[in-house]
Amino acid sequence: MPTYIRQQVEFVRGEGALLWDSDGNEYLDMLAGIAVDNAGHCHPAVVEAVTEQVARLIHVSNLFYTEPGIKLAEFLSESSLGGPVFLTNSGAEANEAAIKLARRCKPGGNFVVLDGAFHGRTLGALSATPQPAKQQPFEPLIPGFSSVAPEPQLLVDAIDERTAAVLIEPIQGEGGVHVMPEELLLAARNACDRHAALLIFDEVQCGAGRTGSLWAYQQTGVTPDVITLAKGAGGGLPVGALVARPGLSDGLRAGDHGSTFAGGPVISAGALAALGVVSDPTLLATVSRNGERLRDGLAAIRGVTEVRGRGLMVGADIEGSAPDAVAVALAEERIVINATGPNTLRFVPPLVINDAQIDDAIERLARVIA
Ligand SMILES: Cc1ncc(COP(=O)(O)O)c(C=O)c1O
Image 1 (cartoon, protein in one colour):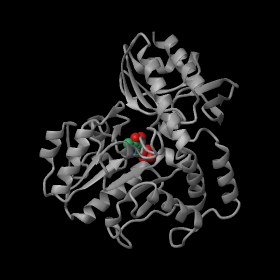
Image 2 (cartoon, rainbow, N blue to C red):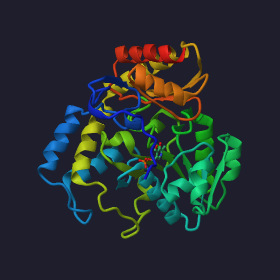
Image 3 (cartoon, rainbow, N blue to C red):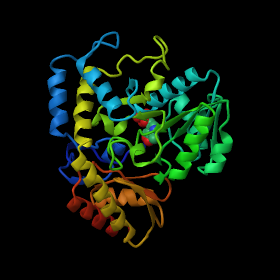
Image 4 (cartoon, helix red, strand yellow):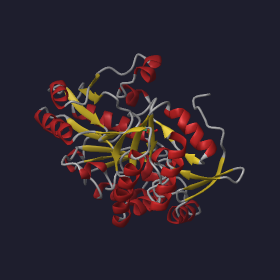
């Protein structure tokens, strides 16, 4: 099915923040497979963990335990909210699990999401993604979802005793890289507490070290009840998860939910290795520093009208059409990048990118945009 609009490039090899195409051209990667290759392309620790595990045991199903699956769940829980984990194969599936958990906790309950949000393309996650172009062809969607502008009072007014959960990306990614203000997150926390609703943070894009802390909520003054994650947590392998606070340990019961492949030993071994890389405090400090360097450099380019973001999750609005700039950058300056809207360029490079590569990316882009 022609669902993807692809660039005319075939990549054959990657290392760190670099990619090579089938003609041998080298590219600087500012996309990381859409915020996935956080540990860098083909990180030796990920390659070794996967290679070792794939030769030992590939699949047995969730009817049994495997050591990598247990260790992955333990790491995710201990590094974040400390409660139960449900492993999935993707971000949309993690959000589906969160939606089911919230309905289980408050039967028949409703969901509040924010304008501009993106939570995935399966029908539940799509119902939580208030974008007419994505939703309308697939209506009727799941009832019980409403969206409000990201204003504290509007959000508080939308939450009541029928609300099962409020679903928020702490930094909206697909919507154009918008950092949700702390007062909005706090207002959501308080209103959820008042009405016994779950506060769910979708960290699928902004998690796994992307913003300079392992999980994005750790840089806010707000602790959610549930986080969902995927993308960068797997080092390029299809991993997702829901992590809840300890009080929700019997939220989903035996037989309520499942997935044949999820948490399999090979992807779990790879994810553990990738998470080991991106949770390193030295790397996380570098992510914050390099994020600032990137934002400062972009803001100084003529033609860039606004720069937003945190850590290495950055959006830059440009005059003219962002998709055109992307095409030129790819073709002439050998930069891998994408746009999240008509005039926003998104920068989500591998977190192992170094400062010289950041400067190089800024120079190349300045030649395209200025
Ligand atoms: C915030 C957020 N949630 C969910 C998803 C869906 O993830 P997946 O494509 O792995 O299903 C995405 C994907 O871009 C995302 O950015």
